[in-house]
Amino acid sequence: MKNKITILLCFLFFSCSSSNQLSKKIWNNEEKKIKPKNIELLNFKNIEKTLSIEVNKNLNINISNKIDTEKSNNLKNNIGIRDYDGELKIFKKVKYKKISNSLLSQSDIIFGKNYLIIFDGDGSLIKLDKDYNIIWKKNYYSKLEKKTKPFLFLKKKDNILIVADNISKLYAININNGDLIWSKNHSSAFNSEIKIFGENFFISDLNNLFMSISIKNGVENWSFQSEDFFIKTLNKASVVADNKTVYFLNTIGDLTALDIKSGFLKWQISNQNNNIFDKHFLNKNSKLLMDNQLILYSSKNDFYAFDKRNGFLKWKQKIQTTIAPTVIDENLLIISLNGFFVVVDSVTGIIKRSNFIFTDFNKKELKKITPIGFVVGIDKIYLTLNNGKMLIIDVKTGKLINNVKIDNKLVSKPQVYEKKLYIMKNNELVVFK
Image (cartoon, rainbow, N blue to C red):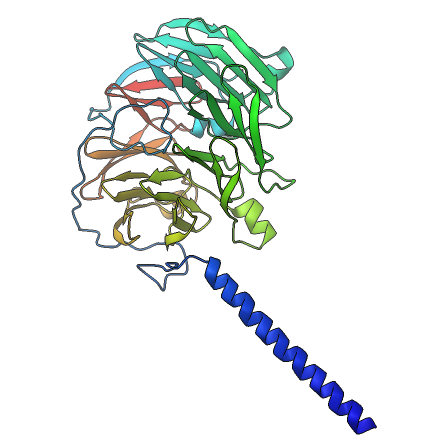
């Protein structure tokens, strides 16, 4: 009897083991079905850490000098080449109340025909004419709100300016006279790009709630809740869109594609980092960039290219950046966090060239330097750093040309409009010709 029981138990054990193996195989087969087919590093396959070597450093790369139009609402986040080839001589300075917020680096200037709009340290909006004289100055914050030093995110549609801030306020004003059109108090602060499509705009809050909102009256059309975490990060949510789909990268690195009209989920790629500390505290994202059928961006230590139609991974490289890249003629231009100017084939992911551009700084300085943002001029890149410096880089050779001091402190990314370059300091707008 005991022998029979023993035999029966052994039979059950091996059956369960076989069943588990079979189940595992079936699950793995399912995984293979849903995983992208082309997940592979197309170049430098053995690199496990962030790219830190120069590649083809003496290679000259000819890039188109076709000037991109200066669009106020760039749905793809691809800035391209701007019409600037100036001598970096200061043309004008405009003083304003000090912006103490660390988000200064992400400041956007709104440009229009014969005017521009900036904001200052207490949340005042300032419209300047072409000679940089004040047309109007408006503030829609209480005394208590002003003390919190609100930081504003701006986007315009025709004569309407959409304003969101980091203290949970959302409103629209008339650009002609600065009058308030509508105002809403949201349940959470905002830290997101604003993108406009038709009569609506898209935005995300700090809880990673992504929303479509009417420009006309501020009424929500639909919303989508992506993964949230109780401790908030300084990562700025990024948004790109085409005529059918809106894509957003939330603060923890999850990429989501939604139907642009209904908000229905099309596909989603979750941050693959299972370490909660790394995922929510150390994860650093760049802006999204759309180029043809690709969604391109950096998250933590990697740079990704996904097929926008289905979320399949096309290629991946060990390049880390937190600033917006750009694509020119299938040349993906990236400035890495560790000081490399990298040119990647946007289609294949192959690194064409990488040059170390932080050559003017010693080891102690290198530990503190962070790139803020760059703009591509006719044949040069203008890159601002968190130490108030701006580097001038030759696009063709990848070599550093000059190191210009703008300030001793944090400055904004550079922006170009009508052949002038603009940089915001914490208390001053500097215009170069």
